[in-house]
Length: 453
Image (cartoon, rainbow, N blue to C red; front, side, top):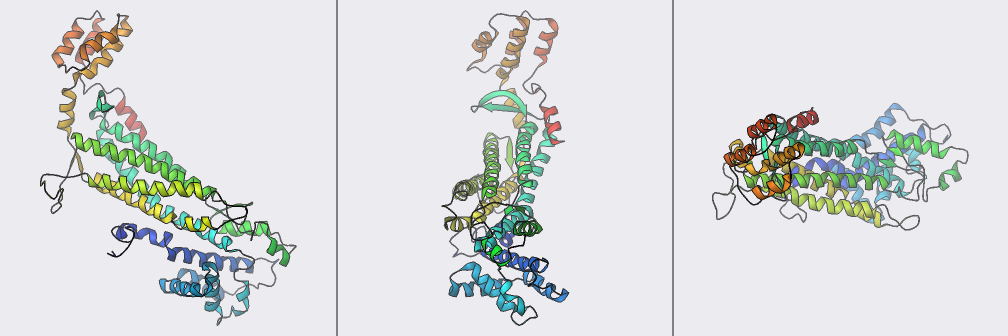
């Protein structure tokens, strides 16, 4: 951890965000640019219509592959050194590759590096590969872990009664498992969309018309060749763009991540509140301090940390989703500056999910507290009693229960005594008298088990 880092991502949270470094850093961007340039050169060598690019030997292909697989921080540093002269990041990559190959058997192929490409041909593919690899390699597995952990928390509590609260007030009971399963259900939808996310790419020149390509090889089917190349990278081909890939898929991805994060924010705040209410207790960690002056405190800091990082991530995602889809005419450079922050949004999301997971692993359920809450709120049975009264055709059931219960604390005896006065079928009356706040959970257990599988 660097104590002089300006961003907490590279300071306080450096260890947490390190898994994203291979996909979202300046080093990663340079490496993926190198990857695209090398793969494009190899692709040209396989195209019969591009006769001037000869086929490469196995040794030459191995040399090119090593430029990708062996790309190091020292290599990236050299590219940055070249950029100080060129003042152009993509041209620096081209010169780096030419320098590396000038004394090899591929020296005759140097001018085919970056052939007919505009910088955005390289950048859009590099960015797509960075996002795809970072999502699939780091963020999606962490998201899946969170969903699985919450699901495992929910399963043993599918039938554990919980006093619900609507508007913060005691309401009809649910179960703890069902309330947790709601978040699992919501997250799974977003996870599915993230897993099915398309990552688009283009390779069509300075304004998207293959102008330079056709000037050199007018008979070549450049759109088909470009499609083969983009798809060989594991991306979806975008056939019609301006100079830039339109970034609509990025907006889709960032909007989905924002929705996932908003559900996480909702979850964090609910868990924080359940801790405050005593539903969950936090296991203490030896040596940790909750307050500098109040020794008894164990604060729900992990969920608060998650909430803060969600805010930062979503602010970036929302800006990028709006900004990147808008450009002047064939292009301006504002997208290039903005897109460099996409890794920051991913990193703050990773921190948020990790913090929530850390907090969840400290929790235990206080079932005695749950039972006490339910036993102290018999008035929540006003709902089933007035509903059965409606079924029986009794007059003013809602109003009678409102008069009996609103703003009042009732006991089990008082509620049962009221039921005894009602002109109800004996079967209904017996069922209501046997009802308790803890047994009034509807089909919550069934719903939980069906959701979790």
